Image (cartoon, rainbow, N blue to C red; front, side, top):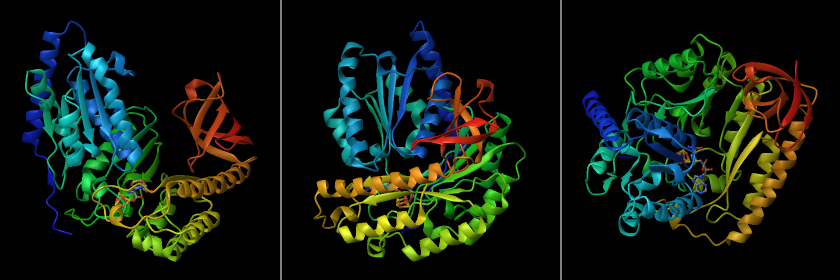
Length: 472
Ligand code: SAH
Ligand code: SF4
């Protein structure tokens, strides 16, 4: 890998953006008799959702309110995802649907941002075929939204800010959080792993960690605001700390966050198995606030496929890690991501994945049919297995996982679970919903004033999607 050249965005640059935000606010007040409404939608992963909260934070400072429908919106922003083809096509579908609305309301501003915009072919297509899109910015230019918006509002041509870059760290952007119980907090950005199927390292830049002081400051603020669960985010949180001035790794950071006073729990994602150390497992065991659950994407249960994917671990390494974690932390659970139909994967190799999920017994699986991404190594590999065949394998995997999950849910009957009450339940009035430490959905009867607290629930019934119980 070439040397990294990522930068920390200076206070001067942020001050300039702050001034643009103020100017936009004044302009909108002068120009419109009512506050304008923005619709912001983020596709894809939690990092994107977290970026979406910053975009909303900046818009809020500029005077925008928010709406759930594009029909009511004066500004629409789609924060896009490039990880798989279906997300890619969905974005174009959504943007196409805005054309007639914009024809009726030419004042409406349409913005596109996120990972897809960092791909030059996509940006070119928007330039040529979607002339009604006003603002396009990539993942590295998110903090310049106030400037882009101001310039467009004051008559500039369509704005494109999509330079390629190793990335940056921007501290201090305003955030408008979607929830009031759970918050996500990025601790690092980018990825240097170059798994051969994955586009993330090309669109999110080089791996870079936030300073521990900045992270701790944000954790304390969230706890003071009453958040009960904080999810630390990164493409590979286990390699946190590389390149920072001080010697610190992810385990050290977890211990420091665990020491912050308050009644809250800590989750993190994603953990790459190649960097998941015994030290990390020991730290989870020692840290009361860290949930005893790891999302540990395995991708495949076959060593040849894992090698072709450039994952840098074997099935044996992975299982040894799971074994160590189970011995060290009784009751620990795991969830995972699986790719079905990687180029050249045979049915026999797929069966190894099936065997692995039976062995590990995950509480949840996120399963994907391999999707070729332009510019990645795997996109150039021979891929002879037809899509219908891959779909059959996926269905087989899903059936197996559904059986495993049903058994695991049923095993919870009679048990007392500690649950973070997150909101109203799906089972009707008087029901609340939450999750236990493993991330299982738990529905129970309870008053709304319990939302945002930890409660004990005795499980009485299990369906595949949730367990049901009563407050103890
Ligand atoms: N950094 C995380 C994952 C980020 S992408 C990790 O390494 O675990 C989330 C998931 O999308 C991946 O775990 C993988 O299962 C899936 N994914 C990524 N690229 C894909 C592709 N080209 N086709 C299908 N699934 C893909
Ligand atoms: Fe993609 Fe691999 Fe990086 Fe995860 S670790 S973001 S799968 S390249």
